[in-house]
Amino acid sequence: MMVIPAIDLMDGKVVRLVKGDPNNKTIYSDNPVEVAERWASEGADMLHIVDLDAALQTGDNNRKMIYKIAASIQIPVQAAGGIRSVEIINEMLRNVNKIVLGTIAFQEPGLIEKMIKKKKERIVLAVDHRDGTVMINGWKEKTNLSIQNAIYDFRALGISEFLLTSVEKDGTLSGPDFSSLRDASAFPGIKIIASGGVSGLEDILRARTAGCSSIILGKALYDRRISVAHARALA
Image 1 (cartoon, rainbow, N blue to C red):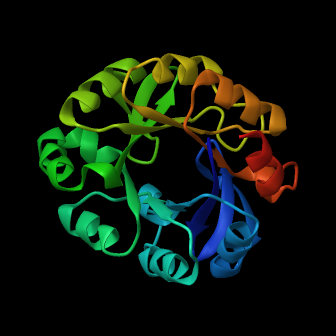
Image 2 (cartoon, helix red, strand yellow):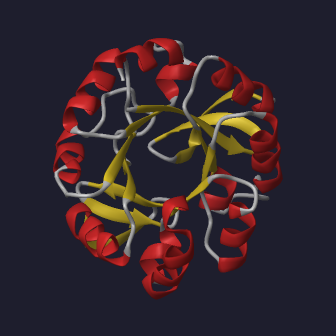
């Protein structure tokens, strides 16, 4: 299982939100490149960088910073947050290894199907959910899709990697939604990235047992409740 630290960017700073709420924010660093280099040096398999300003439409985007981070380290970078046009998709793919698509995929599945045919291995679908229902537009808007329906539909289009985040768990240190992770991992031929609520090493073991291919570490890592090295030893 891959261990993937998250770097959430807002106003050019590394932050963590609780349940995606910009009013419940902790700032951890004003030097994202330094943070990225630290996680890379500690043995991270990949970095997951989220542009919160773009996702929440709260300010200028952080794409230049994402590209600066990607150029400064030797491990792969996966970028997410507010990637809602073909132009941004193409720009991102020129600068990072993978992109995570959410809102645009659910609003324009036909467009995404065309992109997948060319860049299948570099696109991850974000299945952000609250109480089993997929959320889009910065976790503010409900869709009419369940987690299972979303995976079924997009697997049929060619997506093979899905990032599951429980909105109610994210940033809470209360443990991931293991029930949803187990159910999603039961789909054949796909990979599930676990995200949201990781609190310690036990959660990593449980995510591995649930069948996840990767796990994203956020607040627990920044609050020093867990280390990249210890996580990798268990993953």
